[in-house]
Image: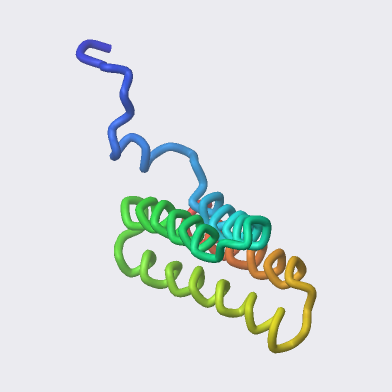
Amino acid sequence: MSGDTGAMSSSTLARTSLPSALPVAVGLAAGFAIAQGTGVRALGGAVFVAGGVAAGWLWRRRRGWAVTAGLAAVYLVAFVLAHVLAIGVGWPAWLAVGTVTVVAAAITYGVADR
């Protein structure tokens, strides 16, 4: 390849097989784990936001703004629902987070990654 610098362009990265469901799962589960493990909610929130931004970038590049908006809503609802299930309903925190993570990642995979 002539002129190839070895760096991956952003358009090449968007076409890679990295499933956008991965940053969704990491943002939700790792964000919770980091907040719980460190006691610093803002740090967990930063991981949650980073996962959402990464997934959103992939969604927009691959599927456009309408799908991005819909999946961003799914991601945010999953975050809120985890709190509702854990605090409001009384589920164990990891059960609530695990459940919403699996559902949000599955929806993301079905809509954006298949």
